[in-house]
Image (cartoon, rainbow, N blue to C red):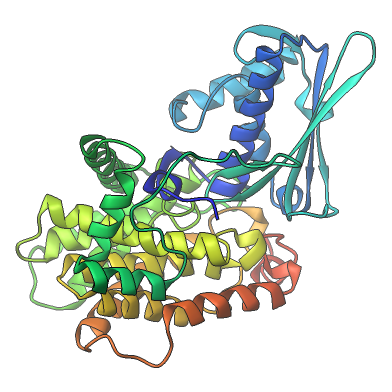
Length: 450
């Protein structure tokens, strides 16, 4: 099994969707880069989207992402404030600067085609075609497999000349390693990350992720107006924050979960607006871990930078298990694979930052998922807005609850994390396709779009 790094779980990109925006942008960028590196100068480039990418692609800005990726932009590097002008220019000129280097004719209305049918291999499939001067064609297919990661069809992942000091593929293995080495889960992850890069680089990456998460909260709390997409959803975070500040300090315990809910809401409103967020582990669930991290730093006495690192590394360890043994793609698992996984990761991370034992951390992660099993993905209008934004607030609160429940125990419990991950996988396979990011069932068909 291919080893994973914290950089596979946390990436800084733009909204609104990791699988439908970030993934297609990376695929389009990879295709344009391949053509450039091989010295191929096509006369036209075509893109075909299938399955979930097609059914909710417009609402998730997949078409915008493809234009950006073909132009040479990356999720990490593109300026969210420049996207509208870049896309408008392509539409106006019916031309695109492929890989940012040379212009070719490109009409988005003609050259990006949405096919509602599913292809074998993955529900998020796309194909790019380069049409050459002699009429021949070069075709590459990609799958967007969740969290912004892509996989080229038919390509074998490169073998990594990498040996982790503490490899693990299950929660049981991870707990055994912790017992044998007398180390915490975060320390195990840190040791494994040392196989990828120097310790200082890992610390720098964690600091960058933390800063980006907190910055997305701050931006979300200052934004106002209507979210794009046609549902006419108004941003609420700014007004809620102003009301909370007006009320001032209170002993009412509700103030804690009101702030936590606000922080998660702010991130996902920013995500829905196409702003910069951290996939954690996806964009649709981008608000859960930042809100729990902000809770730790704001409400936990004695919180430290090291504690924030512990939270993030522990959360990543749990995320590895879901990626390796199930999926974090809503198109495969429903929202249990996004908000459910984020809740599980955040619960484990917070428990660790609060001093939990590895067994208690594993328990927190299990609780976080157990009460998200069966969560469907049925976004209204194919937009990452309803119920996605509020669902992140619920995930954050549930994660905090799970962490404290685990801390009240000694780590012994009936259902293991491995068992709940396998249950999530089986449940995801059993969920009908209309409830897995297709907008063909649930709220998406029972609520009339405004």
